[in-house]
Image (cartoon, rainbow, N blue to C red; front, side, top):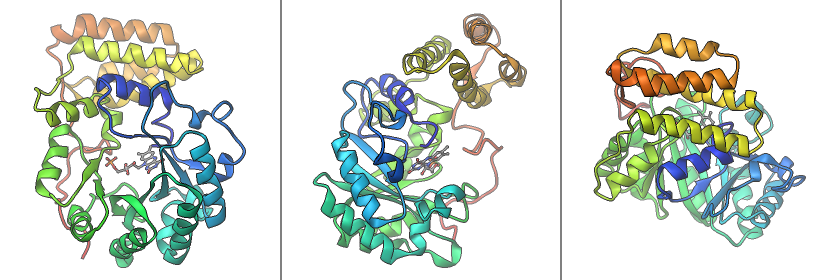
Length: 340
Ligand SMILES: Cc1cc2nc3c(=O)[nH]c(=O)nc-3n(C[C@H](O)[C@H](O)[C@H](O)COP(=O)(O)O)c2cc1C
């Protein structure tokens, strides 16, 4: 996830999961930039020791630049290359990348063909179900991907026009997975390890599920998935584990070259989300954190909260219970089929 899953975040997640991570995927990288930069100079290409297997995700408009970019990514250590056909952001769409590929399947086909020829590692594709409700084309996209040698196909069950509104259409994801000849990963709105398992139980045609925003709310979630997968009790992080996690994140960010203000910004982002899942309501604490201007007092405040107030206040961290992933209160939206 762009702006989220950079090197320190990926390392944090892997540490919290005790190394039980399948494939690490970078933030998406513009092929225009990719051809000019190396891991030494380009932040998004940097990895940590032992980060393997690694998938580098790229985006762009022109099949030939994507092919050159993909080859460059393999040179930069990618074990897999993924093409982004799902990003809805106007800056990416306007330049012909991301989910705009879904409006031009011949270009997508040619892109896959040229990228496939340019690399020897497996090629992945990540897409949405279509551009808008009246042009759902996930089955056609899947057929093209299969024909062009894509080896892993991830579907975010929303359209581009939906952005992050409404819900992902898991019936549609399942429809594609049921006819696919290649592994399909379903993605959209999974809030917890138990929901990940529920999706896999409900849709046996899927080869896996992808978890995005839940990581921003609960960085422990992939470790919890691994616990569940291994039949172990699922870790419910207590105050000490939450506090240590935040300190570790601060340390990883500083090691990565973030300034104290940069570290503070990232901690604020994380706490703005995590604190919503504290029960009883912690909005006073959340506001205090948002208004703290320096890193040191911020860390002192966190320490006091987790070491003194948490138990006294009877707090519990309950991600996945009350809110949807856009940070709003649960809605009355219905799961399942979203499009006619
Ligand atoms: C801030 C942000 C950045 C994202 N960046 C990427 C990206 O670079 N590549 C990608 O494939 N998806 C990206 N996504 C989409 C997520 O990977 C995922 O497909 C989407 O959020 C739906 O899954 P979720 O409900 O589990 O979050 C991003 C999402 C967010 C919220």
